[in-house]
Length: 334
Image (tube, rainbow, N blue to C red; front, side, top):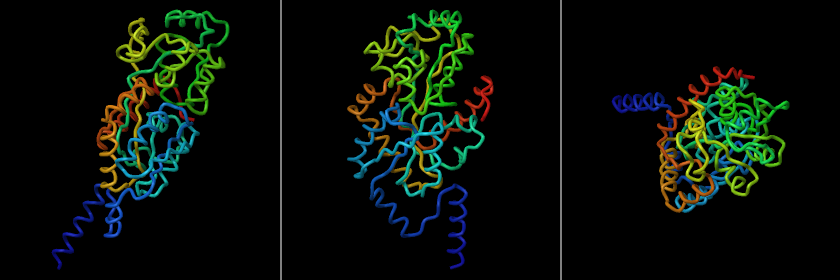
C-alpha cells in the first residue's frame, strides 16, 4: 500500500508539472464521450470577416466527424479581446473554444489593460490556416494603377489619403504602417470595429486604400469596385497573376505574409479533448472538397492543421516578433 500511495503521489506531481488537470473517474468517463453536446466556437470579430468565412464550411465538415454541431458565436470588439476574455474564463470542458487570428499575438504589445495572458490562459489546439500575403487595394476613384503611382500621388496630395483596418494593432494595421515606413508615405489610419466594416468603408469610398487579406477583397476586385495594385507575399498570388509583389515594384523588405487562424481552448483543457479536436480539424482540412471551398472563399490562405505544440510555438514566436515590430514602428501600448 505505501508503494501504491507513493506512485500515485509521483503521478499526481508529474501531471501538475505538465499542466494537465487531474481527473477523477467520472470526469474521465465524461471525456470518453466527448463531445456529447454542441460546441461553441467564439470568433471575437464581426461576422463576414476572413476568419468567420473560413470557419463556416469547416464547421459543417466537422459535423459528420464529431457528431455535434459547431456553433459560431461572433463577439466583436476591442480587437478581439472581448471574445478572447470570455474563453479565458470559460470552463475547460471543450464546449467553449476560441478561433482567432494573429492579432491575438499582437494585443499584449498594444493594450496595457488586457485581462488575460495569451500564453498562460489558453490551450493551443491547432493552426487552422496560414496566410501567404495581403493585397493592396485602392478605391477606383483614386487615379492610380500601380504602387509607384500611389506613392507619388500620396506624397503630392494636399489631403490625407486614408486607409482602413479592423482596429488598432491588428495585422492589417501593422502591414499598412510597415508600408508607410518603407516608402515614406503618410497614409492616415482609420480603424473600424471589424474586417467587414473596414472593407465596407473602402468600397463605399470613406477611405481610399487598404492592405487586406485576399479572401475578403477578391469579390470586389473581380467586380471592379476595388483595384488591386500590389501584393505583400513572397510571390504573386495565383488569383491575381497580374498584380506584382512589393519586391517587384522596388520596395525591399516588405514581405508580409499576413496572419494565421488558430484554435484555442481555455487553460487546462484536458489532453484527450485537445487530441480529439486536433485530430478532427486536421482530418477535415485535408478533404479535397473543403480545400477547394476554402481556396475559393478565402484566397490567400492555405489549410494547415498542425499539432498543438506547433500552434503553441507559433504563438510564442509571434508575440515576440510583433512586439519587436511595434517598437520599431513606435506604436505604443494604450
